[in-house]
Length: 487
Ligand code: GLU
Ligand code: ZN
Image (cartoon, rainbow, N blue to C red; front, side, top):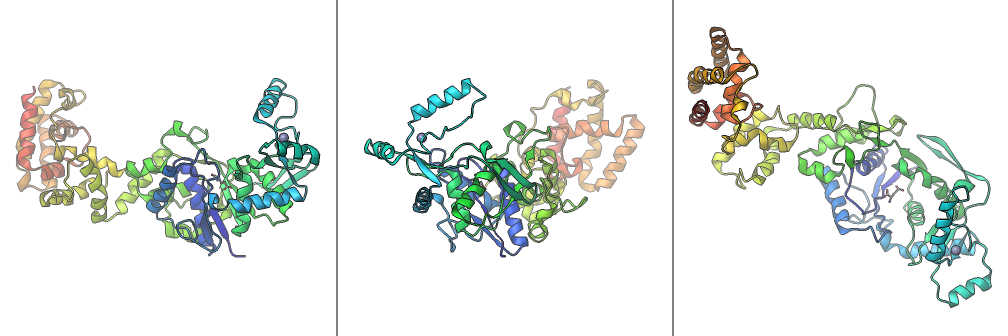
């Protein structure tokens, strides 16, 4: 059997961690099996549909470097791959079910259904949901509604007894009493549009999908889908509902935990390599130890058997760590290309950078590369090279356990060593500061910290001597003098 899997998003919002994880697992499973990965757009919910979401979908996967074998933009044997372009098919199958007595037209007005719901809410014990009012209408009753021009919906007949069972690769047998399935779900809405359930299973069948990997929130739809496959006498695909994605607090990942849209991660300065690596580890593990996986590795190594039943945790800090690791793996030139837009955005760089700026960038990369977690960190980390930093508080200059007088003294005795920077190596400068520390009784850290703040405006910066070399000694000495003058 040749594996065919699909990612079937509804363009009703931005691509988020959970959706991307679903897509990646499907993609890696297809690749590892020599199968096909298909993109299908499930746009039957016209009220929630937005062009922006659709564009975001394409942008996100382009950025990730994930390509489908078949899809709206690619074509393929089983297209069109957009549900709104396949409406004829769904109606035809719904009518087939009616003629076989497996579905029926329901003429209930929304007023009737609202009243029914209100009544059921009062009496929590009674059967909830649609009361199957139209399931056994006579031909005459139907003809009367039609004559009145009432637009019906088409509902599926859920069996009144028995149970539905299906197998899930991860969860084992999933059983549900048919009386626990919400009564007689709509297949075709009164405007003629199919619902998700009908369109989804018809398309999976027609597109010869072999495995359904999707978020666990779709598990409750499983029994209904199986009943539909049975009604059509089609072989259902193999199901695998993916482990939930949680925040660190054990709650379902949501905006409360932080941003979940890929769009925000992209603009925030994450690398696609880091995102792919880290997201692939949510609910999946190769073994107990290996953490680093590039896309090409996962294309070979991904296995369904290695999915975890337990929910996966999305830890923002861990992702940041991965991102830092992947930044270190970039060549200096690649990193330079990636940080230029962030600096250009602040107005600190021209596009393209001038040749002086280009030299500055080349000098900057080696000293920031080890320190960046996000590409966007480059902006605060290098602000001292581009802009006036004198806005810091005098208090920032003063190390803990020092006072103003001590700090002034530190700056005064440190300055002459800094002044020799152009003739000295970093090691030699360090030696000089160590000697000064012994001689003056100031701790080494206390000697360097005020100088760092004086030069960079911040207590955290790339290595001090390298920073001064980039900024230029003259400018650095001026900043030190300005700091001294503030006491
Ligand atoms: N359109 C559904 C979604 O947005 C697809 C669910 C499924 O994979 O069956 O998640
Ligand atoms: Zn009805």
